Amino acid sequence: MSAVRLRLFKTRCAWPFPVWATAVVAVWLGLAGVATWLSARSHAEPPLCPLRWATGLPCPFCGTGRAGVCLLEGRPLDAWRFNPLACTCALAAVVLLFARVVFRRGLRIERTPREGRILWLAALALLLLNWFYVIAYVG
Image: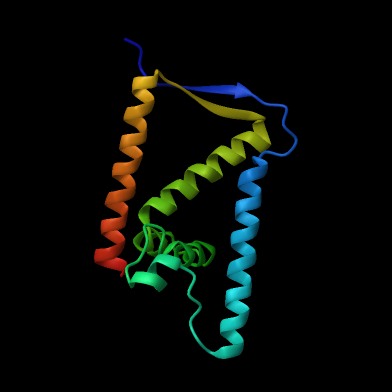
């Protein structure tokens, strides 16, 4: 039986981000910018979360924007309190991006199909735990 292995590999990619990820981030930032601009003009809170707007419940990612602001202000513990999973993923993304840009190294996860299913289930469990945390403490 093999175990999940993390392996560094050399990359020649000039642009370190997948195009689809870049497009998603660009669209989200654009929509957030428009919502912020409209809220400043109307003096109302922008409904950035469609789930919260529709149901009143926060989504698993609610608090990520406030966490980002806290990180930019140099308050990492406050950021982590707003959304621990988002902050942990952001830290991992920064480390991986740094390794890719500076050292031209990427990270590959080698796994069997069974291990892949287990990893997906673990990720889903983390997402649900984070969602319960956000509902209970961030609201």
